[in-house]
Amino acid sequence: MTTIALLENELLERIQTVPQFGDRGFSIFNLDEVGDIAAAGVGFPLAAVAYIGTVPRENSVNTTSGVQSAAADIIMVQKQFAVLVAVEYNWSDTENTKVVATDLLDQVRGKLLGFKGVNKRPWTLLDEGPAESNIDAAILYMQTWATLTHDKGDSAEQ
Image (cartoon, rainbow, N blue to C red):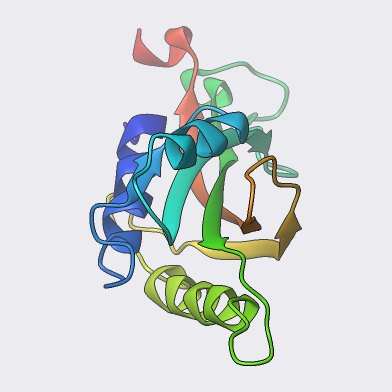
């Protein structure tokens, strides 16, 4: 079974191949943790991955002519994750780090879009845009990524 942890680690490993991130890629529980990481002095840019949730895929419940079977306990779901990119904010006549942030988003998108890893199904981009930041002098962008997996109930194993 493809677990949330396996998928999250896969995203993190792919993101860490972007040279500007290297070892500044983190698994987080919520957005506030990005501020804590930045406050710890790890430096910028940094990236983080968080599990958002699971959404049943429409028409994914399997039933056979109203007869319940083990197959009825297996459904297709979409696992969703947030990928956060934080860049130190600096705007002046000579330097604008917003461009650096959007370049990093392009690189992350290139690493993930259509990639088939542990799940054998492609990663898809659901949305991308600025995220609220509680980090002083930093801008934060978020991409939402998803992949399809099968989830099964306990009765499917009997």
